[in-house]
Image (cartoon, rainbow over all chains, first blue to last red; front, top):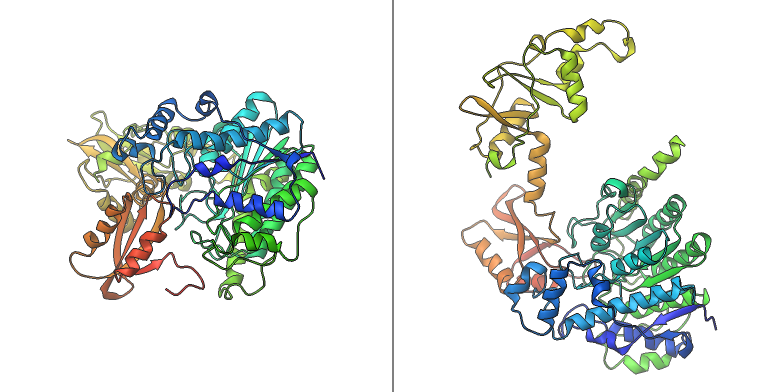
Length: 388
Length: 215
C-alpha cells in the first residue's frame, strides 16, 4: 500500500446539493469512494479529511462583494432577483441553505490536497469533491459557486515558486480557471472539451491563447461533437506532452470531469471508459517526468453518476495510488450495495463493452477535423520551435 | 443598432498634401488599413487603403530603386469621392455597403465633418457580440411553422424556467417558406429539461441531439 498518495474525502461533500433532481449530484463521490473501498484500493491511512477554506482564501480569487452575496443567500436572506446578477438563484445554480459552507468545504478539500502535496507529505492527492471550473471571480455559473481549482492554484503560487500546469478534460470548457489566470505566465491552462458551438459555456476556441504576459500560456482544443476514444486520446496525448515539454511545469493540477462519455446526458461526445484509463495514466507520467511526481487530481462534471463517474474516478485513484489500472469485473458487493437505488442497470466491469453506441457516420471527418484543431492549438509552440 | 454605437471616434487622418510615405508609416504604427483624408474644415475629401499604397509603392524586391515614388502626395493616389455614412444609420446598412461596393471601411460624417470610422472588423465584432457568444451559454435550435406567435410561445417556456436568453436569431428553414428556425443562446449548462419540455409540447428541436436517442 502506497502512502505517498492521499484521498481527500468527507460525507460533508454531500452538503453541496442544489435540489433533488439537479444534475450536479455529489452522490457520485460517495459511489466512487465505496467502489474503491469494496475493491480494496483505498485504506483508512490514505484518507484525509477536508478542512474548510477560510474566507480570505476564497477572497484571494473571488470578489469580496460576491462572497458576501453568497453568504447572505446561504442564510436565505436574499431573493433570486437580488442575486441573479451574481449567477445564483438561477436554474443552474439555485440558492440553498448553507451553500457558502458547502462550497467552502469543497474548496477546503482541494486546499487540503494541495497542502499535502506542496508540504511534501505525499506526491499525489485526489479530491473528487472539487474541480468546479466554471466559477468566475464575481459570478457563479454552471453549477459552480466557488472555483476551488483557481483558489488552489492561487494558493500554490502564493506559497511556492512552482509553475502550475492546469489540465482540464471535462467536456465543458474550463473557462473560469482560464480567465482567472489569463494574463499569468506562471500558470498554464490546457482545456480539451467539446466545441462551444452548441455546448455551454460557448468559449474555448483555439485562438484563446492568453493575454499580455500570459500570452501563449492558455491552450484550448475544442473537439467536434460525437468525437470517439481514438481521436480524443490522440488529441489529449499530443497536447499534454507538447505543452509539458514547452512549459516545464513544477506541479500539475488536473480537472477530471467525466462527462465526455457517450452516456453523459449533457454533452455530445462519444467516449467510453477507455479515455478515463488513459487520462490519469499520462497525467501521472508527466508529473513523474517534470514535477518530481507532484500531482493534484480533482473531480468536475459528470452527470451519469451511476454508470460512468464511479468507475472513471476510481481509476484516477488506482493510478495515483498504485500506478495500476483495475480491470475485469467490478466487486459484486458494490453492485449489490447500490443496484436498488440506481435507476439504470449498473455496469459489471471496469471497461465498457464494445458496441454501447451506434457507429458514428462521420467518424473520419471528425477525426481529421480534431487533428487540424490540435495543430492550430499547438501552433504557438510549433512556431517557436521552428525559430530556435 | 446605430452606427454611432459601434464607430471608432478616435480617427487617424491625413491631409491631401501629406506624402505616401507618411501614410505608410501611420498604417504600420496603428495597425490599420484605411486612412480618411480630410481638408482644413475636417471634411472627408478622400480615403486611402493599404492596398492603394501597396499598388503605388515600389516592389519589395527593388527596395533601393524608385523610393522617390513615396514622396508623392496622397492626393495622387487617394480614392475620391468617398462613400460615407451618418451616425444615425443602422449597422445593417453598412454591411450592405461593404458587400455591394466591395470595400472594408466607411468614414462617418455629420454636418459634413468627420466624426468616426467603421471597418469591416468592427462590424464583424459587433455581429459576433449579437450572437451572444460572449456570455456563458448553450445554443439550441427549434424548427417552427412560419406563422405569428411562435417566438413568444417558445420564449414563454424559457421564462417560466427562469432561463435567461442571451440572443435570438430567426431564419427560414432551407428553401421551405412554411418553416422557420429559431436559434437561441441561453444561459444554462443544462438545457435538457427544457428540450424535453419543448419536445413534449410538440416542437421540433434540431439541436442538440444525442446519438442513439430517438429525435
